Image (cartoon, rainbow, N blue to C red; front, top):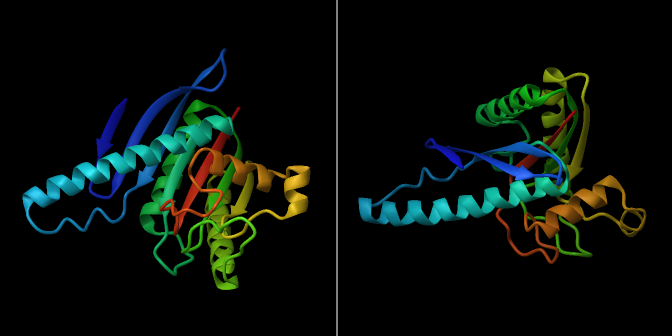
Length: 209
């Protein structure tokens, strides 16, 4: 496993077996915004860094697992500024890099994007405020717009993580329901709404032919 640590970005490359016959490379580009709170003293900093490193590794492992479950080659995690619908320059760059990495593996077929508001995924049977649902939707549109500019021939699907799938969607197992179920089963979200530190973020899953 090869790691490159930069002040606000953690790049981790890992190989996973998607089927018994085929092994693909999964790249996880995880923005670690918030490490900037390096604050008071080297000892405290070292302790914080160790704790943050472990949390990042757990987070990345879950993302790789989700990519495996969804049979996707690339998963990129990006962050939004709180309350903002637009992509930061860092998030734009990470998505562009993920698409470039995917092109090196083959032809990009489908890009699926799970987008959060500034709140965690809602508990079963609950809903978030309409303002949060709208924010996640607007963020999804901006991610979709960027991907379409870079990969106009790919199929792009977005999923609003401020909403639980309804009973009918679960019954017929729509892609929205399927994606959200997989994110819950891999620990990226929690079925009962336990905080998983995904607010203000998005996951971009890329399928390559």
